[in-house]
Image (cartoon, rainbow, N blue to C red; front, side):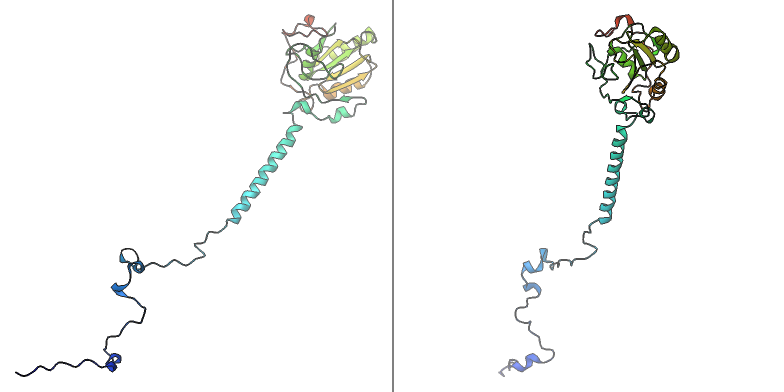
Length: 264
C-alpha cells in the first residue's frame, strides 16, 4: 500500500507573508477573552465619563442676586421712611411737634404728653393746670360752656383730647368784668371752647390745649386769640381725637370737683 505524504509544517518566514494570520500584540485582550469587568454590565462595553462642558456647568446667577439685593434695599428704605413719618403723623397724635403758628406766640409752653389712658380715680399731673395725660373716660362738655365752679382735672383733660381750648382763671385775681369779657368773646356758643375758675392759678388767666399752655395777666392780651387760633381743634397738629364730639350728655358737672372726678 502506498504511504500518504503528510504536509510539512509552515516555516517561520511564512508568518509575515500576506494572508497569514496575525497575532495580537502582547498584553492586548480582545473579544470574548476580555474580563467581564472591562466589558461593563451584561457584557456591554464600558461607557467613558463625559467631558466637562461649559453648557453643563452650573453658573452663578449674579444678575438675579443683584436684582434681589436692590429690591431688599428699596423695601428697607420704604419701611424706614414710613416709620419716620409715623412719628410726626396725625396717626400718632400724642407726639406732635410744635406747630409753626404756636411757636411764634411769646411765652407759649409746648410739652409732649404721650399718656392718654382712661383711668378711675385721680391722676398726678406734671403741669398745673394739666395739658394732657391720663384722664377720666367722661369729658367735660366743651361746646362753648362756661362753668361756675372748678372741675376735676381728669374731666377737663379729656376735653383737651377732643381739641378744646380750656380757659382757666383765678377767681381771686381776675375781676368779674374780665370774666364776662372772656366768656363773651371767646367761649359762648363756640365749639371746642370751655372756661372754668381755677384756684391757686399763678396768673389771672391761663389757656390750655393738648400739649400747649399760655399764662397771661389780662383778658385783653392779644395772645389769647392767637393761642386759640393756633391750637384749637387742629387735627394735623394738636387734636388727638378730632372725630370725637365735645358734647357729653353723660357728664354731670355738679359731680366733678378737684380730687373727685366724675366717673359715671
